[in-house]
Length: 78
Picture: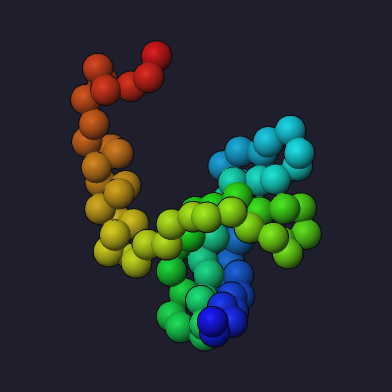
């Protein structure tokens, strides 16, 4: 199996942190030296280990934000 490489090109922010210190983050990441994508996943404190996550293109991220902003008030989890 080929080695997967990554470079966090920009840390956009921490979404949450669990009891073990892992943080769920939104970053721009270049996977295997490709164009960076928006990426949501959990990382250990020194960014050497990661969980499964999701990577989105700019267009997919814009659509996600659009869908989030258009949700109905009754669709919230309160």
